[in-house]
Length: 157
Length: 277
Image (spheres, each protein chain N blue to C red):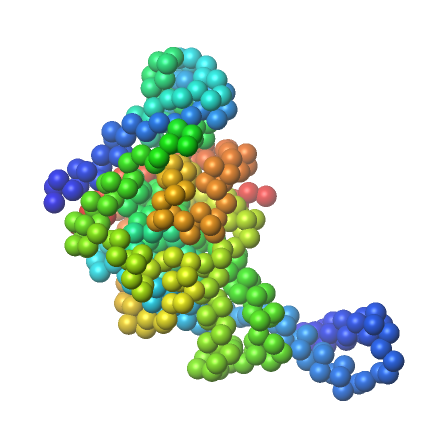
């Protein structure tokens, strides 16, 4: 089980995913806009993402290593097959449910368009769902535990 | 209110009459029209919204059951309920469920039920990402995006009195039709404008909850990198604007909010601890 946990954290700490700069942006020394600029990256520059941190991604580029604004990047090299996700999560499926998970798409149940359109009611699962619901006080205690402080943020106009 | 509706109905009926230059003035027919117009514009009230939601949720659970893991289900309920408490509808019977499916998707059901798939949860890195996705789904409920779409669609597919029958009689055939229609909508998706609004406001809700506001954009980045050929994400791609387009819209409109709340917690450790078995 330890092994699984480590595998799960892996993508967060050691992902090296190809990405492309979608608009000219600065490569920064640290994940902050007032940090020193390492280099200017042109649109379409290919980089490799090493780490994510909030709105920033640490990347390796031909101009050196540094931090780039997440929204100036798009993961995946154009047209390339998707990195990572299938292998790891497939393994996780097997470990978690004891099935490969692929049976779902061939069975009666599943979340494909047609399967949703033809779904029949499942009152037993609905009762379970209601049982798991949390009240406001419990949720509030949970937030305190995580040191989450509510902020007053207005909806955009 | 009744009188206003009646007047509005009369105006519509009279307008129709004038337009088609109907030869005779049939008062009975006109009263009928007014009655139907009155029903068509009737707002679905909150108890009805909740009742419709339960029936739709039951069907979605027929498509994919909950992951059999009480701890995981409670964890997601805690995150979701905390976020919902920061909104203008804090006292709906909010409930959150992880569906046992490898597909990558999430669903908001009228009245406060939110589903996220195991497949989507497994691709996340921290609690702030989960909060971003739940925030997006919560907005669909707050703004009644699905409810309005159900009502709009049902009016054209359920003729005359059927809509009010469907609301009144929870065991009747009209009800069945309404719920089947409401469920099928999740295979077709909402308007693009609704999805982009849910992205913008979802970020605000996650930030209000005290989370790093970049959670949702981070998930969109992950989704963007998934190949469109991957069948696990086919429905999500079919029913939503492309992740790249959603990210563009966010960077255009939400950069100030994102940056103002970027240093709030992500809670990666708590997330991983809860998600692993």
